[in-house]
Length: 134
Image (cartoon, rainbow, N blue to C red; front, top):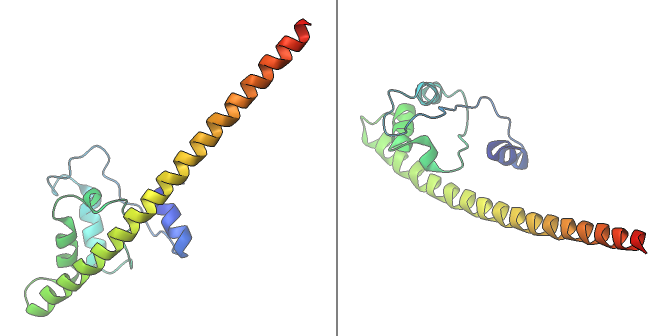
């Protein structure tokens, strides 16, 4: 299950579309067709939220660009909205980072238990072989 799918599932959200520019640098927007489509769809309000494992996945300055696409930047009201949404985004990012750390901890625990289980299976096989030799 992907990160976005897990977050959407936990929150009862529906994923409308996934935007992925695989193997393309985030330094330049112009080469990122999916990012440009995301910005266009944001402007048209085709979705309510963007799920990203990290804000950095959206590219440099993209959060500001996304908010500008939605709210414009020509007036002070838009700037106030951007500021408010940037604060909200920071709060969401902190929650997502916490979620990510919890997921990593669970994954580590699962891996350790899986290794312990494999070790027990190997010991059991060794004992079976030894018993068959007797």
